[in-house]
Image (cartoon, rainbow, N blue to C red; front, side, top):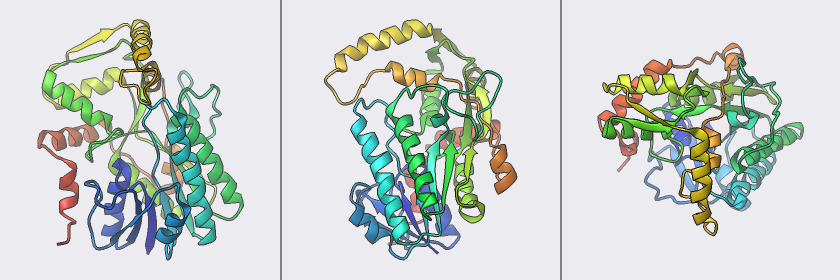
Length: 340
């Protein structure tokens, strides 16, 4: 089967494409740069140069495909300009949906984020039915939510859309903005300690990347139009997360904490120096709020309806550490599939 994929050079998209071709599928991939180092190379992956803002390039790339995996998204919260978020996450999604309707696509999978639900309520995990009770604190969450609304709108028009709200992804893969756990492991291995805000009780949901890939395939096969699923793993506080990471690295846990409010004030002060830059290179307060907001979540619906299963945090972090310790780089994921 021919499957159209966006975001194939990214953290999730690259591993998803490799998994799909192992099952005999043909991939049509929309890519800005066909020479990208993170583009998987295989005779069954056909790259089409184009971008989400260019609907004609999408039409060419999607021709002959039966299903769509729309994984691409603009995620860089350091960016202070809403334009790139809106261009990719909203207008880009609209373009892919328009072409999917034209091509009478049989299944449309939209990769979203659990963060669109906002914070989890005390003592409760986020579910698909939880309403958002707070304003959007960053442009990423806002535009991904708008993208979801577009999927729902086009589902009513006949495009069989399914929304997957993915929690915090970790595990072996390419180095990118989204692979924060890998960066944390490298910091621990190099410095033997961490300096973090004193909100170690903040709890979030962490999902192993291979489970995310499997969830996309399960949704492609079994989900019905209009369905929405949270795709996550275990809920864990930073205290537990860091503890497991230090243990897997074989290093005595050594964590120094900084007062959260003080750190936010410091961030706001340092951010003043980047007022006229598009990207805030400091640890800005919106990133702190994004990272240290409680986001406990539940994947029970996906488990029940899709047969989804997730990897334990202990096992997943162990695999991640081994990948980094053995100097695993993104190229190792692709060289196996290269065709000279």
